[in-house]
Length: 315
Image (cartoon, rainbow, N blue to C red):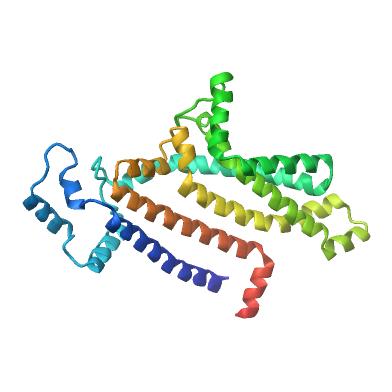
């Protein structure tokens, strides 16, 4: 177990370094001169060539690219992500300030997708080829086909404009996150439902399940004590990847419902060409994705005895 953990962590380090290179290159390829941006934050007086040259020297932009990268990377490791061109504020502070909003949205959407998807998938597997199975499969096809932003606009029209039940924007309480979380979780609920149904049907057709049924063990006991835990393994992996995806890519929900999360921060950075913020966003969310994926990988290794047995034989 410990050896496997070390291997996975060592494999994650080059990926994180590659993400840092990607984020750094993004800053290099961005149009405009960072020195000019830094001098002209107020947009009133254009800096002179001498001022720009002095600022480039101060920022280290005249040094070789590889020296710039290592200097920037060491600053990042010390928690210095730089400052925004537009606001002049510390970027890491702004990211950490907005992160709780995105985390709350992601966790609520994850809970909705897990509860709805697992429950419906289990019912569809137990009552295979029934009217319930047909209806749920039809609904999952619709949820997978309809864009999330369209569902978000439809919910705003129904629950906010017509019924006056839920607010359309803000992040003051849990009520403000219900519609964004639903909009984000619809398609994933459908995917989880299909995964759960397929995994349970595979367990129902396995040899141990059929032998146990012949021996008189009740289907309910087999379902919840044996089939359900085994079927949950691929669903857990799916939900872990889904959580990482929301944390780094909830742009549509945050923009439609005006949530001040990190994705809306990246959208503002693109709009105003605030490249240091965009650079930090790519690095921060990329590293977060790697960490969550690594955690899910280790959790799957711990929960799946087949993986543990294979690792022990290999060792």
